[in-house]
Image (cartoon, rainbow, N blue to C red; front, side, top):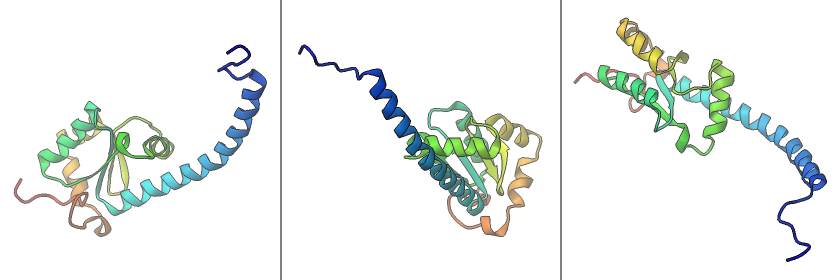
Length: 150
């Protein structure tokens, strides 16, 4: 195995990185735009949307608040989504925070898990859900409609 090296020489690596980075910048801009459009579409079609990760305790906190009040919500689990990392980047660009959860009600980001719990404790969360626009008040997951049995 003399003469064979598993580590590429620095000049070759540098050339490859420069070429790849140029390609990524173009595709990342498109992907970020597509991800922002996806987020906007999801939040415009659902009263309550939670961008979450399955292992995040603050995400569970936010979901529990909506479960307690009997509100339906749409969940996008970023750690199970093919474009989860890009979606999280888009959420950071849109909301100014990269942390999860990112909770939207009626198209507006209300913050994360602690913010959601605080709004509920202050009695402000339920009125926000009740004011959902007609476009967001469809039946099914993410409708934001209250479950009459709760």
